[in-house]
Amino acid sequence: MGALSGRTALVTGGGRGIGRAISERLGRDGARVAVHYGHDEAAAKDTVSAIGAAGGQAFTIQAELGATGDAEALWTAFDTQAEGVDILVNNAGINKAVDGTLKGVGELTAEDFDHLFAVNTKAPFFIAQEGLARLRDGGRIINLSTGQTHGAAKPELIGYAMSKAAVNVFTSTLAKILGPRGITVNAVAPGAVNTDMNAAWLRGEANAEAQERVKGISPLGRIAGPTEIGDVVAFLASDDSRWVTGQWIDATGGALL
Image 1 (spheres, one colour):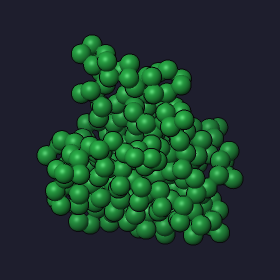
Image 2 (cartoon, rainbow, N blue to C red; image 1 turned 180 degrees about the vertical axis):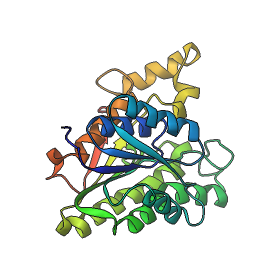
Image 3 (cartoon, one colour; image 1 turned 90 degrees about the vertical axis):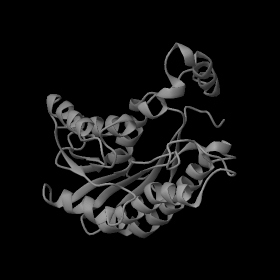
Image 4 (cartoon, one colour; image 1 turned 60 degrees about the horizontal axis):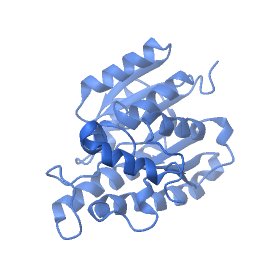
């Protein structure tokens, strides 16, 4: 019997990177996992297959976050395969502008700004709002934030950091609202993680200087992998975290010390 046996989890953006690590860890702990994806169906199905191969249960659901009616579409897809949810992980997020580039305060357009907030802030808010009727008492909501919300953000990540700072406020406020139901709400804040999203500047021999710089930021002297973040989320999803709520969990490997 795993720590999460008999429970159902939903992980947005659950097919790749940190989301995949979260999905696989929750599956290993016994949860039945809804692996959400926006566009990469193959990655989501591969994650479901990996969970199944390890003895777990999972299924995919599709909804494009940031689009009109995204929360309703996500829960409609979920409802066809499960009744009720115990763990909601708002993991899906973007850090780039509409054209796929990083932009600072002088370059961000209104369209870029709205896009970042639609995916990173608006979607988690309404996914949680729509999900409250389905979330069982004693459940868990875990939102993915970022270390960039504490202190001055990197200039090229200002829009991303602002969108995630709003998620921090949402987390602490929702924790107070849902406490009487025994539901905890927490945010996990990674630093630089070795995922596909960061591959262009954090992988390969050509990026050796960047790798050493990131290693040097953490007193632990290395770069985090997705499983480091997945394991923190798994703790917050478990009964062991029952007395932790409304918190912003620094998962940057000490980069903010």
